[in-house]
Image (cartoon, rainbow, N blue to C red; front, side):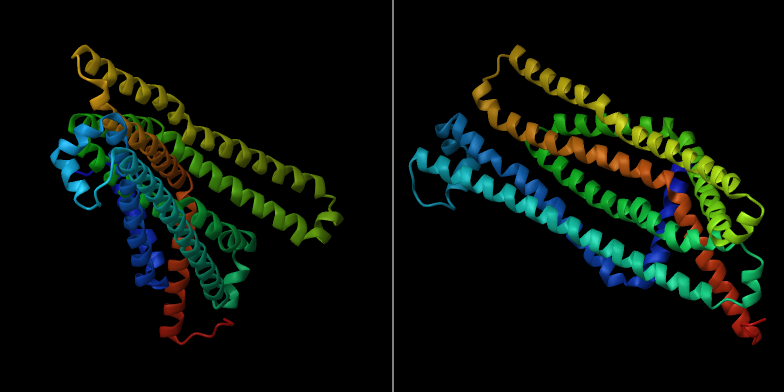
Length: 363
């Protein structure tokens, strides 16, 4: 049985990205992955930290008599309900601030790593290209090579490599948040996971063909822009002699307009599902409350669970949307990775062949 196209494309992308990033340092990559795991753990701790506060606010006696409450109070000195509520509230605030601090630190580490990698890759690719035999440069369009070094590496880093790192961090966070929600309400946690997954998977597959066409169109538009820009500015003397300035500027404008149009559509495609899922998610929460009301359950006892569910949903919805948006982004811009990967492999093969044959770089 052949694997689905999405799975094949995804594994191919991850494999190529890893081959590009591996020489930059496995320990660096492992450290980035480790702090992403830490980020997910602290997001879960930040969400669950409000449970004792809400339980105390709803019914202090109920918390004190429960097994969970007694274990929680064993860590604290004896105190009255008011002081206990203050301590629980302060603890929840500290944990939320701490989780956000870890979140910010993780974002900084990923960005620093990604753009440090971009610098290393850009300089390394340029040096290897410059080591090719002189005759190779006579048979290729230098504008395309400049695009690969000057633009494709930057776009690959910002639109493929960094989103891939972010996706790993978001998925880890989603798993931890769902685990926290599962401890509170297993049925709701399972339902939320299935709902979000099916919705975003359906939208992603539905728009797959458009993203592939957009990726090809963006690649063609960027190549056309750099080619005509090089013809106009790099060969300005010939352009003026032949009075081709307006023609070349018009060709550049045509490719630029196509790129702008496709980029605006790509942003729309990445953000649209958010506006569809928000009413569905809120409607599901309302339905849960109505079901509990129909069963005659005590809302005071439900308040802690509902609070954790609301905060988990508040964190989960943006996470699912960010994962979808970044998957859409990297699939739209993956042509930049293919350009850089193929160029780097081609240059390395050529240098190895020339070295083994003992050729002169001036040949």
